[in-house]
Amino acid sequence: MIRRFWLPVLFILLLLGGGYAWFNGLLGGNNGSFITWLRGNTADRTNLITVQREPCPGAPFILPAAGFIGLLYTDPRGPYNQLRPHQGIDIFVDEPIGTVPVYAAYDGYITRERDWVSTLIQRIDDPLNPGETVWLYYTHMADEAGNDFIEANFERGTYGVFVPQGTLLGYVGNYDGNVPSRIWTHLHFSIVRDDDNGNGYLNEAVYTNTLDPSPYLKMDVDYETANTPITCQ
Image (cartoon, rainbow, N blue to C red):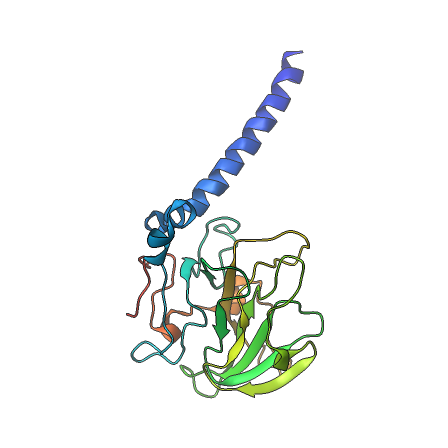
Protein backbone atom coordinates (compact mmCIF):
# COMPACT_ATOMS: atom_id res chain seq x y z
CA MET A 1 0.00 0.00 0.00
CA ILE A 2 2.80 2.40 0.89
CA ARG A 3 4.51 1.82 -2.46
CA ARG A 4 1.23 2.29 -4.35
CA PHE A 5 0.66 5.56 -2.51
CA TRP A 6 4.13 7.05 -3.00
CA LEU A 7 4.65 6.20 -6.66
CA PRO A 8 1.92 8.58 -7.92
CA VAL A 9 3.05 11.21 -5.41
CA LEU A 10 6.63 11.01 -6.69
CA PHE A 11 5.38 11.18 -10.28
CA ILE A 12 3.41 14.36 -9.54
CA LEU A 13 6.39 15.91 -7.76
CA LEU A 14 8.61 15.17 -10.74
CA LEU A 15 6.09 16.80 -13.08
CA LEU A 16 5.83 19.85 -10.86
CA GLY A 17 9.59 20.06 -10.51
CA GLY A 18 10.11 19.77 -14.25
CA GLY A 19 7.50 22.42 -14.92
CA TYR A 20 9.06 24.77 -12.39
CA ALA A 21 12.51 24.22 -13.86
CA TRP A 22 11.21 24.95 -17.37
CA PHE A 23 9.43 28.14 -16.26
CA ASN A 24 12.31 29.28 -14.09
CA GLY A 25 14.73 28.58 -16.93
CA LEU A 26 12.64 30.63 -19.33
CA LEU A 27 12.45 33.61 -17.00
CA GLY A 28 15.89 33.33 -15.48
CA GLY A 29 19.15 34.50 -16.95
CA ASN A 30 19.63 37.42 -19.34
CA ASN A 31 19.39 39.81 -16.36
CA GLY A 32 15.85 38.75 -15.58
CA SER A 33 14.66 40.46 -18.75
CA PHE A 34 11.96 37.87 -19.39
CA ILE A 35 10.41 38.63 -16.00
CA THR A 36 10.33 42.32 -16.91
CA TRP A 37 8.84 41.56 -20.33
CA LEU A 38 6.19 39.29 -18.84
CA ARG A 39 5.22 41.39 -15.84
CA GLY A 40 6.29 44.91 -16.78
CA ASN A 41 4.24 47.80 -18.05
CA THR A 42 4.62 49.40 -21.46
CA ALA A 43 7.44 51.66 -20.29
CA ASP A 44 9.38 48.72 -18.83
CA ARG A 45 8.99 46.76 -22.05
CA THR A 46 10.00 49.70 -24.20
CA ASN A 47 13.36 49.78 -22.43
CA LEU A 48 14.02 46.22 -23.63
CA ILE A 49 13.19 46.85 -27.30
CA THR A 50 15.96 47.04 -29.89
CA VAL A 51 15.28 49.06 -33.04
CA GLN A 52 17.96 48.90 -35.74
CA ARG A 53 16.62 49.84 -39.17
CA GLU A 54 20.13 50.65 -40.38
CA PRO A 55 23.07 48.25 -40.05
CA CYS A 56 25.23 48.66 -36.97
CA PRO A 57 28.68 50.09 -37.84
CA GLY A 58 30.54 47.45 -39.83
CA ALA A 59 27.54 45.07 -39.94
CA PRO A 60 26.24 43.57 -43.19
CA PHE A 61 22.74 42.84 -41.77
CA ILE A 62 19.95 44.97 -40.39
CA LEU A 63 17.80 43.62 -37.58
CA PRO A 64 14.75 42.21 -39.41
CA ALA A 65 12.20 43.44 -36.85
CA ALA A 66 12.08 45.83 -33.92
CA GLY A 67 11.46 44.20 -30.56
CA PHE A 68 12.82 42.52 -27.46
CA ILE A 69 15.50 40.01 -28.44
CA GLY A 70 14.46 37.62 -25.71
CA LEU A 71 15.62 34.14 -26.73
CA LEU A 72 19.20 34.23 -27.92
CA TYR A 73 21.51 32.08 -29.99
CA THR A 74 22.63 28.98 -28.00
CA ASP A 75 19.88 29.77 -25.45
CA PRO A 76 19.12 26.71 -23.29
CA ARG A 77 16.00 28.15 -21.68
CA GLY A 78 12.65 26.49 -22.28
CA PRO A 79 11.41 25.15 -24.59
CA TYR A 80 15.10 24.50 -25.41
CA ASN A 81 17.81 22.87 -23.31
CA GLN A 82 21.57 22.30 -23.12
CA LEU A 83 21.42 19.41 -25.57
CA ARG A 84 19.13 21.24 -28.00
CA PRO A 85 19.87 24.97 -27.67
CA HIS A 86 18.09 27.72 -29.54
CA GLN A 87 19.32 27.92 -33.13
CA GLY A 88 18.52 31.59 -33.79
CA ILE A 89 17.07 34.65 -32.09
CA ASP A 90 13.46 35.37 -31.11
CA ILE A 91 12.36 39.00 -31.38
CA PHE A 92 9.26 39.57 -29.21
CA VAL A 93 6.94 42.50 -29.87
CA ASP A 94 4.53 44.45 -27.69
CA GLU A 95 2.11 45.31 -30.48
CA PRO A 96 -0.90 43.41 -31.89
CA ILE A 97 -0.18 40.54 -34.26
CA GLY A 98 0.19 41.52 -37.87
CA THR A 99 1.35 45.10 -37.19
CA VAL A 100 5.14 44.98 -36.63
CA PRO A 101 7.00 44.84 -39.97
CA VAL A 102 9.58 42.21 -40.90
CA TYR A 103 12.29 43.36 -43.31
CA ALA A 104 14.88 41.50 -45.35
CA ALA A 105 18.09 41.54 -43.33
CA TYR A 106 20.27 41.48 -46.45
CA ASP A 107 20.14 41.33 -50.25
CA GLY A 108 19.12 37.90 -51.49
CA TYR A 109 16.61 35.52 -53.04
CA ILE A 110 13.35 34.67 -51.25
CA THR A 111 11.79 31.20 -51.26
CA ARG A 112 8.50 30.11 -49.72
CA GLU A 113 7.88 26.39 -49.93
CA ARG A 114 4.36 25.34 -50.94
CA ASP A 115 3.49 24.01 -47.48
CA TRP A 116 4.91 26.96 -45.51
CA VAL A 117 2.25 28.93 -43.66
CA SER A 118 4.32 31.55 -41.82
CA THR A 119 7.87 31.12 -43.11
CA LEU A 120 10.24 32.56 -45.68
CA ILE A 121 13.87 31.64 -46.34
CA GLN A 122 16.37 33.80 -48.20
CA ARG A 123 19.46 32.61 -50.07
CA ILE A 124 22.36 35.04 -49.82
CA ASP A 125 26.04 35.24 -50.60
CA ASP A 126 27.71 35.08 -47.19
CA PRO A 127 29.16 38.58 -46.65
CA LEU A 128 31.62 37.32 -44.04
CA ASN A 129 32.77 34.33 -46.10
CA PRO A 130 32.89 35.35 -49.77
CA GLY A 131 32.05 32.57 -52.19
CA GLU A 132 29.87 30.71 -49.68
CA THR A 133 26.08 30.56 -49.51
CA VAL A 134 23.93 30.84 -46.39
CA TRP A 135 20.18 31.16 -45.87
CA LEU A 136 18.19 33.55 -43.68
CA TYR A 137 15.13 32.02 -42.05
CA TYR A 138 12.12 34.12 -40.94
CA THR A 139 9.10 32.50 -39.30
CA HIS A 140 5.90 32.98 -37.20
CA MET A 141 4.45 35.49 -39.68
CA ALA A 142 0.83 34.32 -39.28
CA ASP A 143 -1.91 34.29 -36.67
CA GLU A 144 -2.81 31.32 -34.50
CA ALA A 145 -5.35 30.09 -37.08
CA GLY A 146 -2.76 30.07 -39.85
CA ASN A 147 -3.78 33.27 -41.63
CA ASP A 148 -0.47 34.59 -42.87
CA PHE A 149 0.94 38.11 -42.68
CA ILE A 150 3.44 37.56 -45.51
CA GLU A 151 3.49 40.05 -48.37
CA ALA A 152 1.49 38.97 -51.42
CA ASN A 153 4.62 38.96 -53.59
CA PHE A 154 5.77 35.85 -51.71
CA GLU A 155 2.86 33.46 -52.11
CA ARG A 156 3.35 29.75 -51.49
CA GLY A 157 5.48 28.19 -54.17
CA THR A 158 7.69 31.26 -54.59
CA TYR A 159 11.28 30.38 -55.49
CA GLY A 160 14.27 32.65 -55.90
CA VAL A 161 12.68 36.13 -55.95
CA PHE A 162 15.38 38.75 -55.48
CA VAL A 163 14.85 41.40 -52.80
CA PRO A 164 17.24 44.10 -51.61
CA GLN A 165 18.01 44.64 -47.95
CA GLY A 166 15.14 46.39 -46.17
CA THR A 167 12.36 44.97 -48.37
CA LEU A 168 9.11 44.42 -46.46
CA LEU A 169 8.54 40.67 -46.15
CA GLY A 170 5.55 40.56 -43.82
CA TYR A 171 4.49 41.16 -40.23
CA VAL A 172 5.16 39.44 -36.90
CA GLY A 173 2.57 36.90 -35.74
CA ASN A 174 2.00 34.16 -33.18
CA TYR A 175 1.57 31.02 -35.31
CA ASP A 176 3.44 27.93 -34.09
CA GLY A 177 2.24 25.32 -36.59
CA ASN A 178 -0.28 23.67 -34.27
CA VAL A 179 -3.66 25.29 -34.95
CA PRO A 180 -5.29 26.61 -32.77
CA SER A 181 -2.27 26.73 -30.46
CA ARG A 182 -0.38 30.02 -30.27
CA ILE A 183 2.87 31.42 -28.92
CA TRP A 184 4.04 34.77 -27.65
CA THR A 185 4.07 37.17 -30.58
CA HIS A 186 7.57 37.12 -32.03
CA LEU A 187 9.76 36.66 -35.09
CA HIS A 188 12.19 33.75 -35.13
CA PHE A 189 15.25 34.62 -37.23
CA SER A 190 18.22 32.37 -37.95
CA ILE A 191 21.13 31.86 -40.32
CA VAL A 192 21.14 28.40 -41.90
CA ARG A 193 24.06 26.65 -43.56
CA ASP A 194 23.93 25.52 -47.17
CA ASP A 195 24.36 21.80 -47.83
CA ASP A 196 27.19 22.60 -50.31
CA ASN A 197 25.88 19.94 -52.70
CA GLY A 198 23.47 22.06 -54.70
CA ASN A 199 20.44 20.87 -52.76
CA GLY A 200 19.81 24.08 -50.82
CA TYR A 201 19.51 24.73 -47.12
CA LEU A 202 20.02 22.31 -44.25
CA ASN A 203 17.39 21.57 -41.59
CA GLU A 204 16.99 24.80 -39.64
CA ALA A 205 15.68 23.00 -36.56
CA VAL A 206 19.11 21.42 -35.96
CA TYR A 207 21.38 23.75 -34.00
CA THR A 208 24.59 22.60 -35.70
CA ASN A 209 23.13 23.61 -39.07
CA THR A 210 22.98 27.26 -38.02
CA LEU A 211 25.39 30.14 -37.44
CA ASP A 212 25.68 32.78 -34.71
CA PRO A 213 24.01 35.97 -36.02
CA SER A 214 26.21 38.18 -33.78
CA PRO A 215 29.00 39.00 -36.28
CA TYR A 216 26.45 39.60 -39.05
CA LEU A 217 24.44 42.05 -36.94
CA LYS A 218 27.37 43.44 -34.96
CA MET A 219 25.20 42.83 -31.91
CA ASP A 220 26.01 40.31 -29.22
CA VAL A 221 23.06 37.91 -29.40
CA ASP A 222 24.85 34.88 -27.95
CA TYR A 223 23.27 33.64 -24.73
CA GLU A 224 26.62 33.19 -22.98
CA THR A 225 27.78 36.79 -23.41
CA ALA A 226 24.85 39.07 -24.30
CA ASN A 227 23.57 41.90 -22.11
CA THR A 228 20.12 43.48 -22.14
CA PRO A 229 19.06 45.66 -23.86
CA ILE A 230 20.97 44.48 -26.91
CA THR A 231 22.64 47.27 -28.88
CA CYS A 232 25.33 47.66 -31.52
CA GLN A 233 28.76 46.45 -30.45
